Image (cartoon, rainbow, N blue to C red):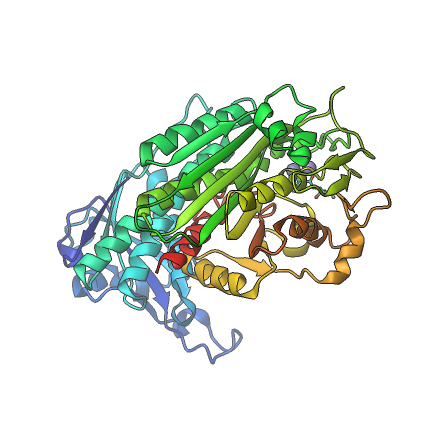
Length: 505
Ligand code: BES
Ligand code: MN
Ligand code: ZN
């Protein structure tokens, strides 16, 4: 997608569609009951351009616009404008409207236009949000809206938005920088979504490794993909215990970003769960919904996509990504409940449930990251159904063994417009993963399941500052929304990129 910055008067811009945001400046002190909504509404188009205001005036006063978030109103041949169409996208109540909403509103506009066969548009940045922040939200939101997962439909229309112009005022060079960075981040998010979207027969661990390698070559990253021999040589007994049951070879993907001029420390370690299909293994999952387990490599794909963005944005900080990719299959070679495995760190694990495989591969991924010299760790994984019970589909789960790390992530996540919620890691929960025969069990049972899984990982992060993101509920959109298609979401990538950037400034 081509992106352009413009400081033109919106009315003077020749474009397929001029997009502007409508907000409601109603007096929110009134209760819903006392307000006979249409009269008390004060709708305004977010632009200082009088010609655009005039073109929208009749529609806004008609009472047809409810200003419900994401509502779309399209005018053809708007009077006095050079644009062919004027698309008004509603953003709700002005007082509550932030860049988080703007990102989604931009996605909704992109999806509405692309469904109508429009390939390019110009978006007027609303004045209430700072120029750079607005540009970032508009471009990232447009990228998110531009993705559709219907690859294998023979009648795929592929109506992508090809070009977007953002009309904003402010310092030209900082706006341009915001625009370029947002495009890199948005496209990297879609790169991740592409990987996650592929079914397991088209995204084996080997193929995931190949995709990572090809991308690494394009952006100038080091990338090594190791197989079973290396996994055994490193004594990754936990990773191998999952991989041993599959005919498909596992892949240990290691990517390094080491820019000239970066300090020796910190070295950030991004560790991703790359289960290309999770049947549950011998503790097999029910058939209902099992097809969704192709997205169990979303954490790994997020780290690969984040590395793409990092390599292109070039922050002065070292980053290493480790993706532990394998299938989790039942077979005559598969591990069984009751088996005891020795992880790379030397800790012993009693396997209670072979379906708790993500923490096993991550245990060795985290240990290996520490061995490679990482001073700070972040992992991302579709780790537990329990995090979906706890937080639903709106927030990813965050766990941290270090408050400073958490605060840094919290800032990054706000900048990126993503939602995450911290869950506890108190010592009390450690009982849940106690084993009679080994150092720990791999499944702490049902209650606090997301926490038990995180407590298990904590044993392998040891004293290294570490964050764990459980994205099981957020990596896949169960339904389409106005701003995003049903399917892979690419959640956490933008936060991770902001997080990494924060170490460089
Ligand atoms: N990949 C699943 C978790 C998952 C569930 C991801 C739903 C996306 C949507 C994970 O490997 C798993 O099976 N976890 C088990 C752990 C249990 C056996 C302790 C779970 O959550 O049921
Ligand atoms: Mn599982
Ligand atoms: Zn899994």
